[in-house]
Image (cartoon, rainbow, N blue to C red; front, side, top):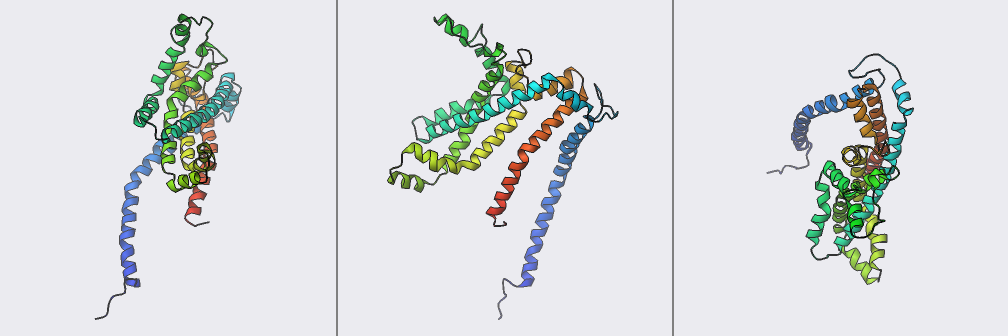
Length: 311
């Protein structure tokens, strides 16, 4: 009795039908999600961009004014200060979280005692909302209630820690609170990357007599690119939408010294009923985010194609 060739064209066509059916079912399942994405997310973004070229105040208006809202926006000192603060906060916050989180991850990677307890302690601040974090640090840095008063009552009468009421240091108070809140997230991501390093690399490096710090600096940390990229992306998204931490800690003050773009947008959207100016500011932030994420997404796509052998 002749045996049937498993690689025959007839069977290949038969096997392709279930795959196409499964693909069609998966596509049909995702259709409602795509409709929601297009209508709710893309649709509202396009509507916001359309409102930014109108003279909308408390209610949407269809009167076209071109780029007049953008001209007013960049003529506003408060907006320029918020952009400057966003750059200061973003650079220091991301760099600080990466450094502190990586050092904590390396310390825990040395198999210290009570590792689980330390990991919980370091990660616990990330479980708190920015509002709670801001209120905690607002109390700690209050010159009349917190650390400054405590230290002076202990005898250090010249001790000063009044960042939240100092115009030159208020934005750094926001950085400090954000750093305390988010470093645990970086620690977890980097620790997962460190635990994934091949043990043979460690054994070979120890046989060669390489110091531990140099193994981390020259061999281990360069392999943690994906974990580092994930951490930077998550932190960068947190920087762009920073609002509640600033409101709870300094409320943008003293004056507008710790103002950030998200607070500027919310104040104009709900407090000053200036819908056109608020949507113009949100459009600028959207363009900035796309300009930052597009090269990263392109690099990730090219890396995936190279991994599949497509390039």
